[in-house]
Length: 139
Image (tube, rainbow, N blue to C red; front, side):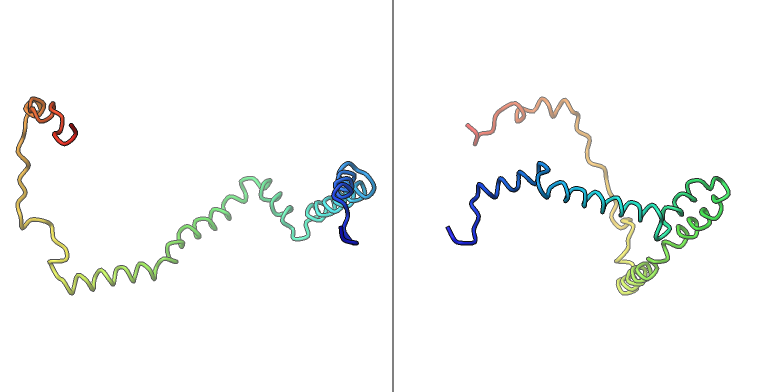
């Protein structure tokens, strides 16, 4: 064992003593609780005024509804404007491709008439012996 090392039994005893409130444990706990209380008090006094603003919003009633509604409507009404450049780029690319390829780019499928598939009675499919016999490669 080196000169500066502490036996593991003494380390465990010191840790347990500090956790159980032994010498140094209680003072440390009071210091932590005191700093948490100071932090709560600083937040409660409203250094940045957040608590007062929140309390005023919660207790303002209907008189604050119209100003907040104006802000929300203006925000919601102008939100899509942020995507304006993207919309312009996509529309211009689509228009460019359409101008380059013409009618072959967009078609309605009227060049080839489509006929529906022939009707097969379901009982004919069930009576087919391919359904009831096992595949040859399985046996």
